[in-house]
Amino acid sequence: MTNLNKMTKKIILFLCSMCFLGACKKEPQANNALDYALASKDPRIKRIMDSLPPYEVQIKYSKILRDKDSIFFKDYDFQVNSTNYFYPASTVKLPIAVLALEKLNVLDSLDKDTRFYVEGDSVETTFASDITKIFVVSDNEANNRLFEFLGQDAINNTLREKGIDSVRISHRLSTENPYELTTKPLIVYLNDSTTTMLKNTINTPAVPLELNKIRKGTGYYEDDIVIDEPFDFGLKNHYPINAQHRVMKRLIFPDGFHKNERFKLTTAQRNFLLETMRMLPKEAGYPTPEYYDSYVKFFMFGDSNEDLPAHIQIFNKVGYAYGTLTDCAYIKDTTNKVEFLLTATILVNDNHIFNDNTYEYDTIGIPFLSALGQEIYTYELRSTRQE
Image (cartoon, rainbow, N blue to C red; front, side, top):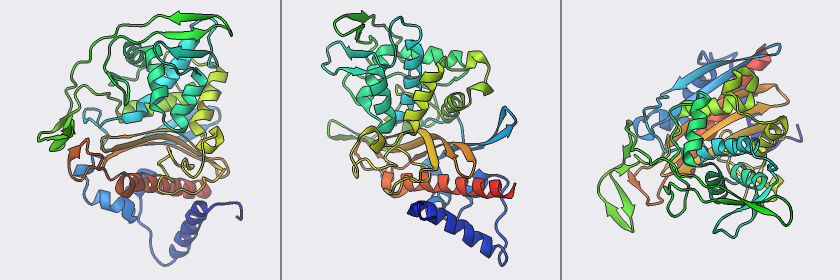
């Protein structure tokens, strides 16, 4: 046990104490890990459950069942509703990264290591580099370059064809003219001295979303002035919990889906993608302590800056903006054979004002997601040991 960090020790000590107390006190019964987690007395969870409405929580958890070579999912939801809007923020970068790799397969002479730049931009990069930045530090500019490569119509249509519906990607992230319909052409290097231009696309204008909770809060800032009316998300990206969960399932367990529902990735592409989804900032060369292990991994370890234990792998994509925190993850304990899928979102905006950069990310949102992951892991670990 000397090789385990403090967080792992805490989890093990917690389990040991529960086993000891079981002889004296009957534990609360739960039919599944999600019910168990939401009934927790942990204050990081309890304060949310005691006052649910303002937090707009949605959670989807999948227990993974294996029978020889077959995979089955047992899904559990809490308040999941694709017609209740939440802002997905950087979680949209996952399907964009996947579809960029898929598109490379149909373009001659191009692969993930092809160098390119966007017309009018001085940054030269590769597809592999941008995808790595997307998952390791959630880089917006890397995402936007892949957005130019794909175009919003292609993103939306391809996801729909794979049975991932209710998604609407309409804009780039944190940049000028995010809703520009005409993508910028990419200049790609065919070799060290030869380049070619990839044709740009003209996309369909976004239609305002007609969803519940599409207008939020009591006011918002615009040009340093407070506008006393709800903030309208009608033209924003829409990537609901069910869609996020479906994308993750198809990536982690492609054999569980029909061929036309899978992403068309080569084995090498998929392995690269999974490795970058799991990768920690320090493994990609980002400095610590600024980029700590859980920098973009909220479940289980989000509210700790300590090193993640080597035997727990988290393949995920987070997003946070406008007071909304979301994480979609496949979590795997390679030592104890624990694995599960978890997607959750929470809104933390106590003053109900948007664009003021006053959100309770660190005090309420991330602690909730961290505790949620810990409790579900604890339940799964105990269930595995009882089998």
